[in-house]
Image 1 (tube, protein in one colour):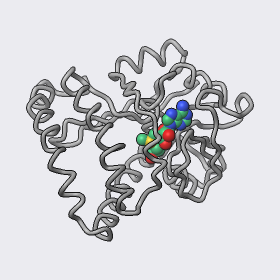
Image 2 (cartoon, protein in one colour):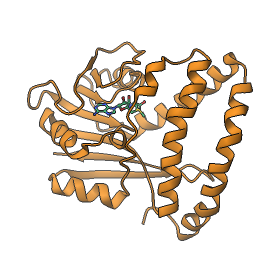
Image 3 (spheres, rainbow, N blue to C red):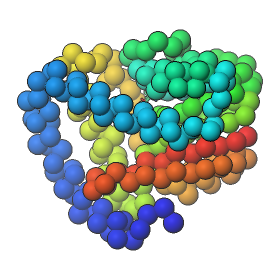
Length: 237
Ligand SMILES: C[S@@+](CC[C@H](N)C(=O)[O-])C[C@H]1O[C@@H](n2cnc3c(N)ncnc32)[C@H](O)[C@@H]1O
């Protein structure tokens, strides 16, 4: 049981409020001066990265070779390298990189690496951006020697599914435009694919079972009154 019935029920009105509030939020965000916006964004990102790193504390060791698939700006990969003293590189299909790790761009399906060439493969908030999820997961398993870490947004009801689809569109397109207009992000960020291929926790576990991946831990977090749930899967081959 990853969510209480009360929370699940309350997420219905919250989802409606959340969508309606989005229309107002654009104007509020645009009115915030660039410096202040950048500071708010940085502190939000710092807290998010810290939580992600804490989740994998016992999973990555010093010197591990780590591949961050769908690394985006690369800042999470860079944070992993610093926290664990690991050898991290990233791959993505869109170039808006802004971090101190090596990053390559590829066709989005075939990872350009030999079998077992990394100790850990990280896929952070990226599998719901992938149309051919299963093929990419097979590739990640092929390139990983011991484990995979997957972070995702997830849902527990049809209304929450629609809320996270809206959130994905909003945070990547609308907030993407806000960041571009404020000069904080490259306009290439808008090329990020949005197929909205979300799954519920059981849907992910079913897929991992089909791939013989062993879930060592599944950490679910609900973001207060926002109808938004996140999950971290720690998986072994
Ligand atoms: C929401 S961003 C997450 C970025 C980063 N992992 C993070 O957590 O900050 C999703 C990323 O997945 C990338 N992406 C989409 N399809 C991909 C694919 N087939 N292979 C690799 N990356 C992909 C997008 O370009 C984007 O950078």
